[in-house]
Length: 501
Image (tube, rainbow, N blue to C red):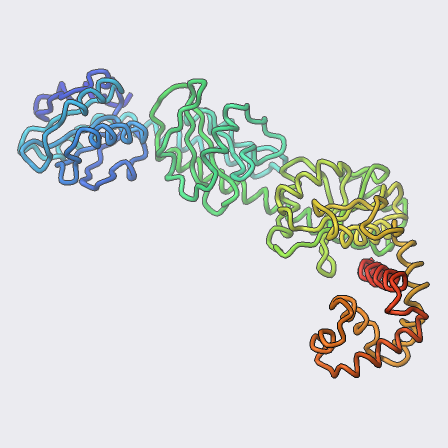
């Protein structure tokens, strides 16, 4: 057991005296730390006796009281102040606060060297250091189980909980939920605290700050190196000092476990991408395709296909990890700037996508796939729906729903409209390689202004006039007739939606 503040007071050669805070004499001292910086709590990990000569110690009572509060929040065991040095007079407010919080303030006789106190703490804690070595060995021994594990839960959390003496959880920083899909969900009290603590936090200082929960527990958070999306959550039943060195060992092995999980996830993604690409291209027969999907836990009769476009390529590349973390079985493949996702639970998948991609991403959802043979058609439907999603809010569109284009419900309707209105013009362009379609689009986009269209296309106004007259001649539509203009515009929009589908 570690030495306590009371034990140090009973060592006469240290010449320590209690100023206030008798309620904190039972606090264990795991280490000593010397600092005269203005914010010494920034450099504590919990369990330290802070020693200072008072060079930056606040002079007024309110700031002295605030200093004690911050030291308590950081988990310090006590505060020792050297006498006849630089410390301003200790105020009644400081004494009252230390008594209220049960935090001991000690004074050190001049010229007692602080190093003597450090040596006494180190010598008294030799047995604890031996126990730490044993627990450290057990932590790394637990990694043997991890090597052969490829599941959807953390195999190390339970072992680490036993060695650290608290509940150890791996948390996803943004969602404040377990990183592994099969780990137990967090209770509402812990979830609320995690969301408040991890929101915007970039440096969690190795568990130095304990966050009291409203049910009496305490929460500490530790960054996991190499895994910015994850954080280690340590939950203790009551206020206790956690071993900072053991915490770092725990973080190290958890970082290795997360890295192994990500390697496994990436391996599965690559295999799934190859399979989905072949399915979209129709290069796998129905029996073989169904069998391979079933082996991956995907029932094609219940599946749908998503097509997603977004300017944030990094988020698209990490989407499969987010879906995996939320228990959504899926195949993903990136083709010509579009991410295709095949999954079963489309509503759950859509909520995960929105939470991770943001509101600007365009998400198109195909109709029910039902059979392997329909996957190529479902890819065209999803691609169509993704383009249609640009005209709705939020930017998610399910194939078969009413589109922003009047009378155009799907690919067949769009094809029919384009062929009827623009078919002759498309055929003419194919033969003559003209700029008629492009000019028509610019003309309508610029409110049928000859001058604005000419400026946008960098051509003479007379050229625009000639081209539009040619369009009228080929299509039989008059750009001065409202109904004809509406048909031309709808046909151009339908053609744009069909570009990928």
